[in-house]
Image (cartoon, rainbow, N blue to C red; front, side, top):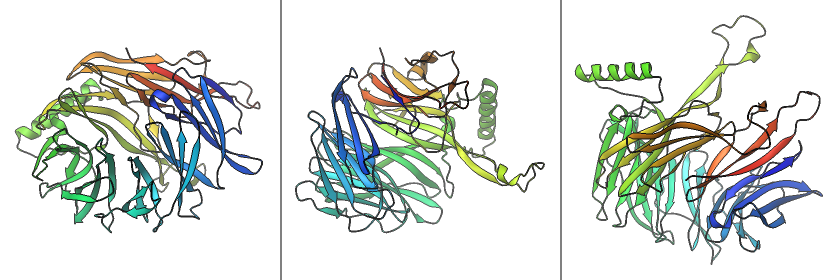
Length: 468
């Protein structure tokens, strides 16, 4: 599906709504009123309904979540002149909607939202550093701050809601100088704190990031990255198990133990890296690799736990504003120029937390100014497909444990413009989960125009990508 846009048209944002299809929305000003335009398409991209809703001036949607047939959009004031939020509830079947106001006792900037049957959880930061999570109850329309959170700087890692309507909150803090730890807070649905556990770790180890899931036996599993004390870089992966009684067991796996972690490097580079690591191990020296790794998903699959993460590094360039046509010197400052992704890793652990296998897919073309998940995975069968979107092409790799079933391949999306035509590709296109075996690929297409003075056309497109 393609929609032609002129230079002044706002772009659509896309929400996959599973069996209900796709929800497109955008905000714009019409007759001096702020409007929210909504389009619901079915799974064949046929329009089911279109609505325009008047929204309060300067309020913008920033977070969204679906629960059954209801889609929720959270609005905040774009200029932060009002601390209260607006929650829009949209019935995906009929298009009917209602708007609630979430009154905040303490102003904060939200960054995460999850839905339970009784209410909505909204997490964010006070003053950009102190984590906070509030619970807004649908029936009473009251908001309360969840107990058990610290009044100190930290990082809100995850809010995870389970089918039994209990939920976990993971928070990373630094109670000791140069060491970070992770707290696991488990709540019943109304927001009652059931238990508050800290993951125990070695004195010289910091736990940097993590994702949690709950097993059928009510055991909590947390997996993420760890690093050496006082370091912001990760050296490997950890997996912790917390029994219902509160006992813990944690295992650590440095990156150099993974068979395919360095496959993103060229063969000679990988060989030199392996040789250097083996030499240090033989000499009895500590091997400390330093990587920045985003942990995105921890899911159960085929009697295992599957962890997916992406490695990246920041890029800097010289600020040409200070060059003035002179020779580049050490006095010309560097400025931040985005994040470059290198590869994604997928790890398989057994139920006891033992490392079973690992694999990876190289990412040699993505640079972005916001850290987000690009690589997605499909694990319906006895193999896992890893895929991501760049430059209107799907990059994919098919793996089975440590083995590669199908190497990295490129497949062109269905677009109006042929692949051999020049394309202005200054927009990052996105690939999102839809329903099992199916993904949504979407973005803005800017065809090449030889007439510089003529405005270039823009096309908003959506492709349905199915794996077989």
